[in-house]
Image 1: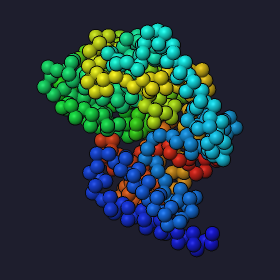
Image 2 (image 1 turned 180 degrees about the vertical axis):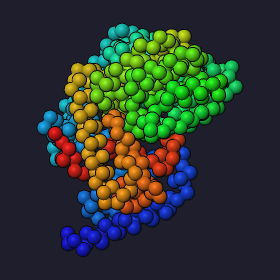
Image 3 (image 1 turned 60 degrees about the vertical axis):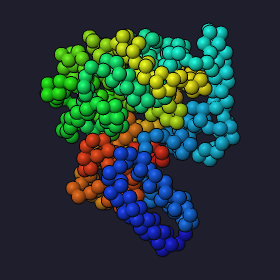
Image 4 (image 1 turned 135 degrees about the vertical axis):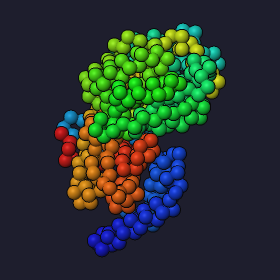
Length: 467
């Protein structure tokens, strides 16, 4: 393509970006779902550019979706001296037989294997007297899978028996149902129970809590503290708000990618020990994306706590194993009495967990249990992409000075948390670079910050950081 024609097309795409932002306007700023809205804007722009006949490689360079955290296994192109990541979709059973991914034909062997495992598992459950096609009076999942997940959390040092493992359609669903169950049982006599919410944080929890009449008590963390809640902040907030009944804490934070150290967690737990009516809702969605030894030490701080009944941990395969669409999640309830009371929320929402979903969950769990190398391979991919994205942001910043800080200097999750330069915003970032991120306000913070995901699409220049 002649350079003048390419330049004209780039200018046309830039104009389309500006128009899309102008049309979104106040609706974007006021949206309760800014991540999804921004993603829809990007999707619409991409479709418009294709309709105009612009080349795909130019479109992908000028419109980059860094809003959603999911890794699209079908769009992986990277490889390094240790791994060929392009085969992950096939290895995880996502790729269909004969599907073309990154120029290679998938065998589909794992796709078929998962379905064979599902049939074998259903036969085994029937032999045990458990028919998933019948109404599940407990509502929280079959006992075999719950026993497996109990053993899974035990590997992290947490002793939670199978009866205290409640399955859910992803950890987000587990959090929602747990809050509902707590509101109707343990907190029924509190007029407006509070939930302490460190910001920036995963703000869907705010919506969930407010939707059932809880008071959300935000506590703003600082860049100097690594965007982590301090024991002093926790103690002061609990003293000021005696109706707080829960602390929501993401061990490896979304959006900042900053993680609590074991000592920081122990200090927070020491404060909670003086408030036995306050539960710790520990979101573990990203535990498994970082260094295993470091993460083990972090979770061990929870395992060593003298009052395990105060702790609930929420787990998911969505991010750590890129199974977002499958929605595999569960909650490990530290208090056996609460574990008996909470299923009321499961029964009054889902009534019974879907049979096919449970069987697929079990088959996939067996697969990754039998192939632990898959977890290591995914962790390596996340690390490669995160390093590549930081490298790209540093290069862009030398050209544009858009950022005051390109990342928060922590290495975990699938995000980069950047601070924008004075006067800049996600709108100017998108207008100048084509990179769509999520504003800090979507996480209860300020719009001087932006979360950028390594998911969906690879990062240009990844070859430079591949080992």
